[in-house]
Amino acid sequence: MSSSDRDGIKNILIVALSVCLVCSIIVSGAAVALKPAQAANKALDRKENILRAAGMLPDGAIVDAQGRSVDELFSHFEVHAVELSTGEFTDAVDPATYEPLKAAKDPKSSRPLSDEEDIATLKRLERYSVVYLIHGESGIDRIVLPVRGYGLWGTLYGYLALDGDGETIRGLAFYENKETPGLGGEVTNPNWRALWPGVDAFDDDGMPAVQLVKTRSPEGSVAASHEVDALSGATLTTRGVQNLIRFWTGEHGFGPFLKSLKEAA
Ligand SMILES: Cc1cc2nc3c(=O)[nH]c(=O)nc-3n(C[C@H](O)[C@H](O)[C@H](O)COP(=O)(O)O)c2cc1C
Image 1 (cartoon, rainbow, N blue to C red):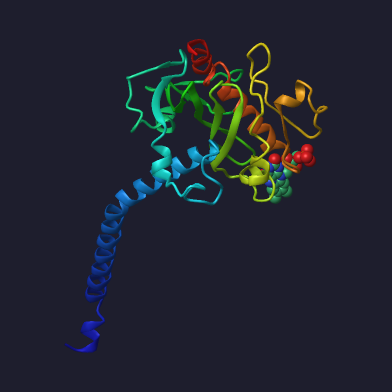
Image 2: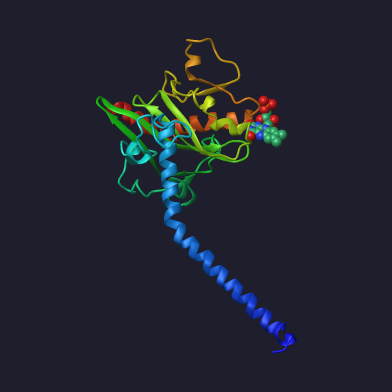
């Protein structure tokens, strides 16, 4: 074969198409082969964040102080599906596989929120969500709830943990946000997160009362019991966090569920 035949347009196309075909087979093969590992990593990450919110796994660690693994610690949780509007447990979906975020996008399993209801800028609300509970000797010891809401640049996703009383915050952990590192991104700073345990989520009338403030009320006052420091230079993220906590502890979020737990206690 002369070199002009070899460099002809037909050969160039054959070589280019063959390279494309081989590459696409490698990429799609890798995507299929890695899917189970990705799903396992996603599940592990979710468990880690639930445990961090509940104060059971230190930041950055993959075992607790006693060396217990994420799976071992997570096995203490009971996972339940809850109908948000009634606050009742439901068997309508399997909590082990149900994905509230997917459900929120599907008109068949969610509803639009009105402007008045939508203080966390969610647009749609899933009918069912999932709650994580730990039982102690005298009833429920810890409650972990998935929460989300808009900050400045996008939606923050995380978990809010409450004590068994359904009122006292145990912790807050965001696993995804688009806020600016050093400003709104400080929502993941352990020092800021350490301000949350002990905060009272509700006022005397049972209404969501968490308040993020630049100046704290006098120590020991009722107002101070609901307060967390605002993030400096990140007023909009701060407002977003306050709104999302109030939404998810409120009547359209887990308010009915927390109320029914209290009534059952
Ligand atoms: C590059 C850049 C990134 C910013 N990122 C954030 C952010 O993540 N969260 C936030 O609330 N404000 C952020 N801001 C600041 C807001 O634009 C706004 O000025 C601020 O939230 C208002 O806060 P202030 O009332 O304390 O001044 C950013 C500003 C700039 C210029």
